[in-house]
Length: 125
Image 1 (tube, rainbow, N blue to C red):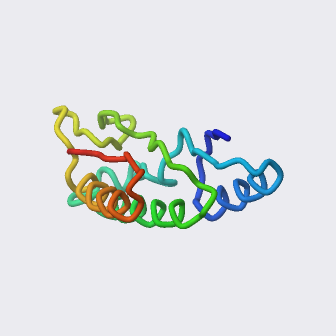
Image 2: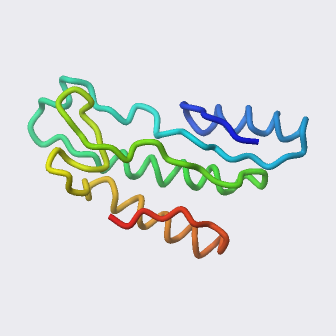
């Protein structure tokens, strides 16, 4: 089964487990992101605001999803450019990787790939 689901992994996994139990089918989370990934305007304007916490949340959610035996994978929605309105992006406004986020994602993706050799979820920023 394939779902688009935006929310914390605890909530989505509860729902996915329910659907897996009913159907017996594996689950692909085909479109989702880390909740609250966009800083508030106040946070955005504050000098020194960084996105390391987002990368850490991503890593934690990857762990949650891949520990569930019925999950096939997760397509992360968010590979777009940051701008003043969106205030988030895996690429900055100069079309360069936002390494404060992507380093955490890259590390976790490689760890997941080693653990589950069938995984192809790699971000190479």
